[in-house]
Structure formats: C-alpha cells, structure tokens
Image (tube, rainbow, N blue to C red; front, side):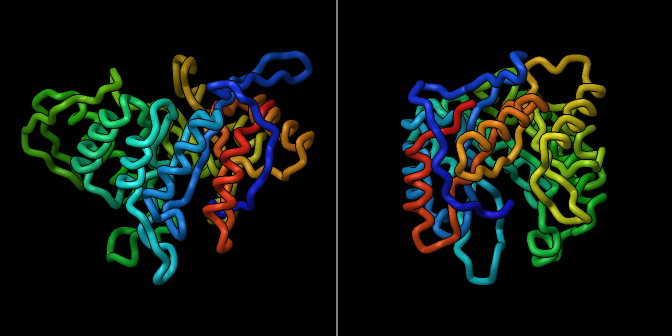
Length: 311
C-alpha cells in the first residue's frame, strides 16, 4: 500500500466511532475506523508512533495498525513492528491494535506465537493478528535467500498458522510438517482473549486461495491483484470477497472485513465512498493519514487528531 496524503475528514467526538451506513434507507455493515501506518521512514520511531496512537485513541479512532516490512529501500530506516506495537499497547487503553499484516512465512511461528501472546497480555486483550504471505517477495524474501514462490510461501503460512494455533492452547503440542517441526512442548501463558487472539488474513482478489484460508479464521483483508501487482480493492471486489468467504463458512456473524480506503478530502464524495464499502460488507476502514514528505509525522498527527470519518 502506498503512502497517501493527509486528508481532513469530518469527524465524530463519540468515545468510539463505529458507524452504521444506510443506503437507500437500508441498514448495512457497522464500520469501524483504523489508522494504518507504515513501519518505515519517520514511522520507524516507536516513541513517535506511540504518540500518534494516543492521539488516535483520544480522537475517537477504533483501531491502530502498523505494517510489517523489513526492507523498503536501501538505507531507509525501518522499525520492528512488534516493538512499535508494544509501545502503542503501553501508551493506550482502548484502541484495537496489531500488525496489518505480518508476513508469517519469513518468521518463526513459535516466535510469533510467543510475541503475540505477550502483546495480547500487555494490551489487555486488544490485539488482532493480521497475517499474509508477504510482498514484495523479491525484496522481503529474496534479499535474504528465502523462498519467493507464491506456493511455497502459502505452504509456510498454512503450516505456521497450525503451529501458532497449537501453541496458543497451552496444552502439550507437537507438529511434524514439511517446513516446520516441533517436539512436544507446552507454551504458557495462553492468550488473554479467548478462545484465542483474532486472526485476519490478507490476500489479493480474485486469487481464491487466500480467501479459503481467511474463511477459516476471523477476518479478511482483501487487496486487488492488478496484473501481478498489489492494488487497493474497490467495493465491487469487496462484495465478491464477502460472497466467496460466506460460501465457505456456516456463519458470518462477527466476521470482520477490512479495506484500505483513500479519501479525497471532499466530504460528500468520501461519505459516498465509505457507504459503498459498507454496503459491500466492509466492517473496518483502514486509513493511512500520512505523506512521504519531510513533515510526515506532523501531517499524520494533525490528520489523526482531526478524528475518523463519519458516515
């Protein structure tokens, strides 16, 4: 996802900003609003990002998520997302938070299991674990001699999720997979959230595999496949994703659907866009209120302080 310029949207002063859209008088999805920030450039500074998170919480945002990249451009500062999120958890009390998304195939699943539970406890049960296979593969994986193929990274993700879920149960667990092996061990503590930490799965539509995976968990974060490149998804694409996931599940109640939405700065047009996403089934609108300029932190702080959108 590319950085987008600061936008001043109309706001609400309610403690939580969950909003319900009405299209032609018909009630559609309840939408929550999240700040979604990169973990590089000026946003590599964990203290600065934690300050932005306190501003977001005070200004009525519902969520605060950070990207997980390890290499962006040669020499560009990159912050560890788990350290950044720990700072966010310690600085806030209410706001939902997490990596959105962490590329599990380049991480050891037992380490992720431990980090996620620790952060879940530190945050008081506010963590969401966003997962995906990771992009761009040539940079994020190839730079370090790790697998870049889509199929192998998908296999790594599936096995890693099996390991993470097994370890979160707090019972004797062992695993023998193609990529990961775990001798019998018991991980403690268990997550504060029960039955477990929510997992939202990212993928590019119309590729079906990521959304069969997403249907097994608690949410989906669809992007669009633009001739092999990753792009932001449109409401029609979201509607197709929701229909596909619903066909894989017995029940969609409580299931979360996220989308990154780029505002224009024009209130009427932006409210129409948000309503279209809500009608398509989006329950979390992710906004990146940042620019790539020298004043990126200041711009982001001002935009976040202006509060989330309203429908």
